[in-house]
Image (tube, rainbow, N blue to C red; front, side):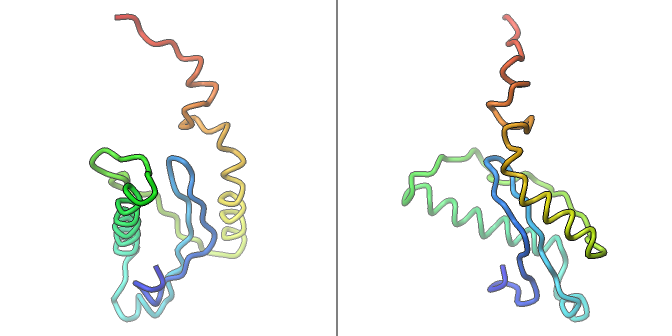
Length: 119
């Protein structure tokens, strides 16, 4: 992202099997120049990573995706102080260790115990 937007840096981030957590730091200069919005940055991130993933389908044998790699929207939170930044960095850094407990994990106990309805 910093190559595309010189006013954006990536802070803590992690790629999970079904989602991504990351902190984009956007400098005040970008807003002063009127050249930036969070939506623009996230849209570019999704576009760049989708294009890279498409290249990896053939070269790396990655699993194909159906129509869209990313969901339509995203969750945002404006970090206002160091305490909030530390809390979110910690959440992101520990996210992989909590994957086994994530209800979106296909191997999660909750999903395994669900009964498939009879037809």
